[in-house]
Length: 537
Image (cartoon, rainbow, N blue to C red; front, side):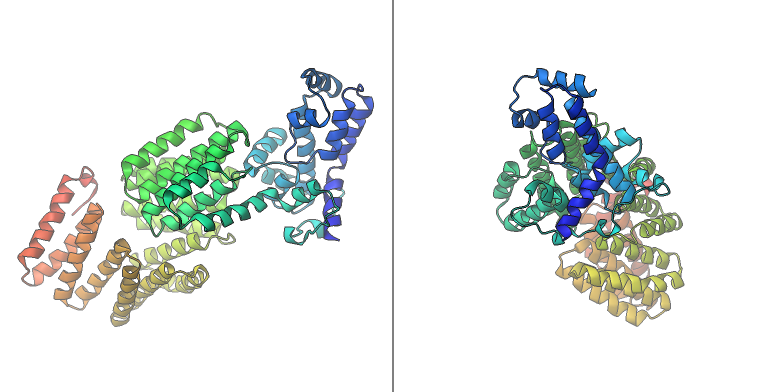
């Protein structure tokens, strides 16, 4: 029954478009009528294009396009697009179908192409069009079909396949195929993975590319080198889509791929390759002027690189542009990512009070979004910011949310982070013994994950506990370990923090020559770093 409802939903929404085609067919010359007849039956087939239309009607003469234009007032491609967009407009006005499903239902290969086409046709984005039409709905389509789950639409074998493909969202089918392919190759040798990515294995959309972008962000959190490898796969996977996608769409995807490769290099602290990759992305943007998503993601990652390079004013300027771009696209998750970079810049510049409202805005954006990792990162960061500014009540109030999100994420890394922030809260409460216990648990968790950077950050909090409890031998030992980690990853600001703590230990007791050598090593690195003027001892 649901399948029949799906047919009725599409046919009713397409009523005006199909009537227009029927009317044009009745008044057109005999040569053009077969084309219009075929269009009426296959308007929403995602594979429909002018060449297919000519082949299906047994036409080889290119003059048929001229005859078609003369008969109906538009070239075939524009005529197909307008009829589809008319139908999409009604679906947006009169149902609650998500935009991606409307896009697929009317035959578009991707939501990016649909959004650009719809914006040119309606003068506004699909979501803005839907909001503007909310008070002017007429002849609403059946509400019970507005949110039909695709998994429940089961057609018997005798039903036409084309309509089923439209409703089931071919893009979602390819997403599942992409996930299955990734599971099959993720643990295979890198050269085999690259070979599979370049071959494409029958993908007609960017589903595998999008899957790889997601994996480079997820897996790159734990393994920076792996993040780079997967980003390379994403860029290489686009070669297989030549001829399957609109050239403008493909170059936009290339820009996005290079941008996320640049981000992966940034996280690995390889700034030279990060800069090269982002320049490749920016060169491609010139050939994709209408691809707002590509522009936004390139800006997002460019701003993040500026942040790592301590170019704070440039980072804030670029992230403001990224935020505005994502706001136009109504992409809450990516708006939040741009805000996260802005908050990071404020914090790095020593303005924690400036970072907190930005983090609160990012958290509000993600309230209804299925982004547990981002939610956890923001909530944890916000809690730590509250703790560092002495806002004890706000930090304590946030702790239950952080723990709940961590349970949803279900990862050892999330558990270590939560234990860390629990220590922060206990320290705020004055429970130093309990804080020390939590910090040691978090430290053990990060050590098991080989996450020396976060282990060093937890160690810094431990040194504060040791200082407050006058255990200077432990303080000096912990700070020495911290200094080695921060120096190894090239973070002079953090090295100076370690040196500051070390100085407290040295002021309280004698120290070894080995420890003094470590101090001089850290100071030498800071003095040689071209960014030293940004830091204050």
